[in-house]
Length: 326
Image (cartoon, rainbow, N blue to C red; front, side, top):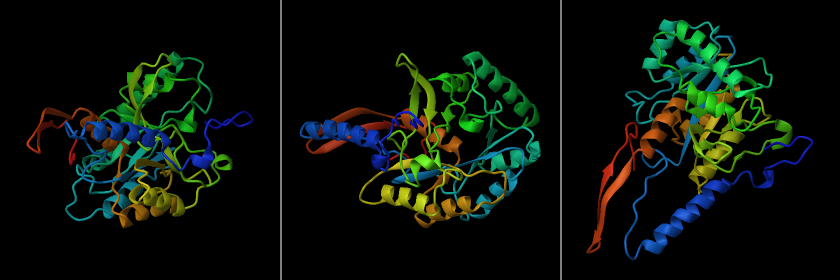
């Protein structure tokens, strides 16, 4: 995407438009409009209820130990009696080094409250020379992580330290082999390139599966990190702009992933993102919640569709985790 001294592969003057999503919506609307005189076609909405946007709150903790404090802040910001499953409680994912000073017991308590503790894999910011070398890194570091956090499920989402991405698809394939199925590595960066323009690096605000070089699907979802605390982005301008464009007449819907580092319990950027979302009624969720919802929505279906006398009838099969499906 960022060419550096070569060609940039993204036209940043149009990065504020989720162009891939808009083209997909055009296709879907053409199908429904051309068929509506014969059969209205039901469709599922992108998120639970009628939400048009969601913030996926994540942070990287490099052993500094700010994670428990961050989780506690989000727990305190949760409305009384809120439902985690229905995305009513603000929640957070922290990708940590195994050396992070958080105990297994602490991590379990937060996990039971709906927070996510995952692994922040790393290779000292060097290119990997082969898929196997990368896969071995995941295997080794996940083993260390699991040995410490014995009460937690194995991580299903991740962000690699330094966003190391040395070829086309080794990252998602290595993640899949280790049970990780949502990747937050596509990073809206560097600041000298994006120039404080809120937008969509790959033209989409939705989690989408990766493909291999032969076009085959990889069962790992890409969740772009639209907001970071190291890309020269302004706050609250960035979250306000993204969310207002999603909620307003433009309809630039999306699951907006943020990397709000958890080396410290609190940061200015994190405070602004949470406040921006809550002021607009936008859910703030952990990455694992996005994966659970996406799998549930994809496993949902319509069947027995009939159209007679102005009445549309159908049966809905709801996939596991698709709470609030509309």
